[in-house]
Amino acid sequence: MDRRSKEFLLGLLYCCWIYGVSGSIVKKAAAAPKVVRGLTQNLKTLPFEEGYMTLFGENNVNVSPDGKSVKLLLDRHTGSGVTSQDLYKYGFFSASIKLPEDYTAGIVTAFYTSNADNFEHNHDELDFEFLGNIRGKEWRVQTNLYGNGSTSFGREERYQLWFDPTEDFHQYSILWTEEHIIFFVDDIPIREVIKSESMGAQYPSKPMSVYATIWDGSEWATAGGRYKVNYKYGPFAMELTNLCLHGCAVDPTMIEHGSSDAHSHCGEEDEKVPREVGQLSEEEKAAMEWFRSRYIYYSYCDDRARYPSQLDECPGRDPAKPIATAHMRFGRHHHRHHRKRGKQNPHAASSSATADVSA
Image (tube, rainbow, N blue to C red; front, side):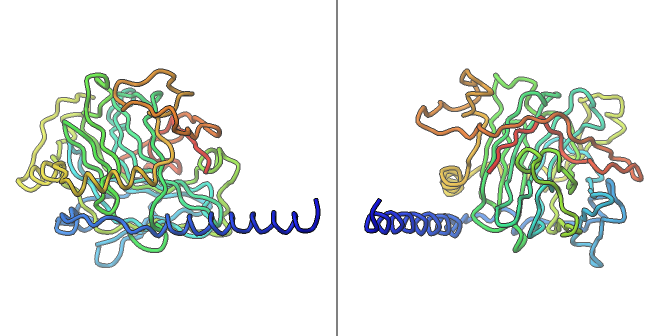
């Protein structure tokens, strides 16, 4: 190759690099659509002590003096977690969360609902999971759901975000009703799961508690376990505020023997909020399409390796759509739940049968 050809090739590579970097920046800096309703701005929040209690890692759970926020720490000794004082039969659950910064490989933080303590072999679950990464790479966000112990059937979706979740607080919310489930980020709906006949008992329907946890997931969380938690950068902090628990509380004594037919007790607002939140406006539907067209990079619905046949609950597959399955790794149950105070478990977080999609 002569000198002129080499210069041309180097120039071309440089232009491609500039285009790629600028394209990435533009995508990252894209302004989110304005959602007129502002779901969480006008909702009642509650102090930590009124709605939550320590799950594990008591010394790593730091509640602010005014009780409005809580910091969960992960150090080389243990992670930490909190859980709601009540179980709920449907509701709207939300928290404003700030994630650890810098090198966070191997770290798992989660905001989720579950009833694994009460229904060990047929539990339900709704997950926001945040998976850390090496320096210079973004946190990955995953949503998932299980019903009636269906942990072998993963319904994972993975996303990038249009902001840096370590720079400031952002609101993450889960709506769960008898008809559908919606995951929100900063009041933008990012995923809706509508109850269908094909899902049957795999649609979550039993009372659940709300959890927030941070823990060491080195075995699987980043690149299938290639990158571990490095505690020289610790302790790592997950911060939560603007805590919302609007749902129909259930008397735990009614389900202590595994009965799913417990009666719930709803105040007027706790009944009203989930019903109104679930009525998406046209602007919110457009915002969800905006998000899903830009930031979703894995969906179980498109994974032909896991599910060769089209699933009835999923929309039709696009044959031209690339599927990120090359680095898939499916874990077993990485973690367990412990509601009772004083019973600590460094691996308490959301259940798994988790798909690991390296990015």
